[in-house]
Length: 286
Image (cartoon, rainbow, N blue to C red):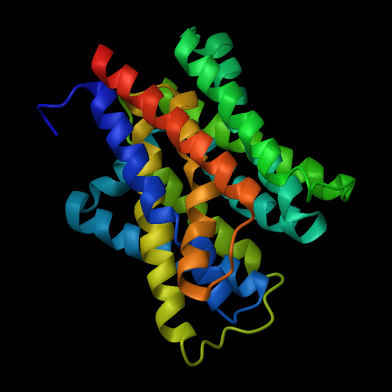
């Protein structure tokens, strides 16, 4: 990693993070745990895994790093825990398509906030990529987009804003390690889920699926996505995460034979090609 440029480091971290996330929807479909049980385990297991991992690496300096993060750390704790909760509640109160289209606005919001707050306006290539991928996502979900529930739609948009603000926060605090703040955010998510959880019981395949999902699809990616904006613009990080929109359904198709629509395949091909070309050009320039 020492021999890589900042562009290469950030792009690699964001790409690896999204690759770990892509089977997430498959694991959720395979599990039999109710929604708030999932939220609880997706909070508490990553919390303990990353917390103990950081204690091994940093020992008691973990707490020093946490407190030294200052207001950046506090903002990141709030946005990180908020997006984890609002995403689930949004899904519960509107169509999945509405939530995903709302979240697809995150790169655009990141670009606008980055230009205003950090004085880092994205270049023309990034703006073009954001617009193309956003239109591709609207195309994918066009047939399933309905009026939905205003409350759920608003929370989907809040999730997108939270993702953008979180990435901007990390970007603005390049010299600070905000992973401890994300760890605290996961603890808050689990604590909030305790108010609604119906059962803590894991049986049969859930004993394997839930821990695997929480470590591979949650713990590892959230560490990488917390570090990536220190090296590349927040809009670029969120742009990578649109890959999950297409690759996630492909995992479901391959394993449980739930075939994606032709619109998903066509729009997904556009998203993958756009991000691949954008990344190639940015890495070439670096």
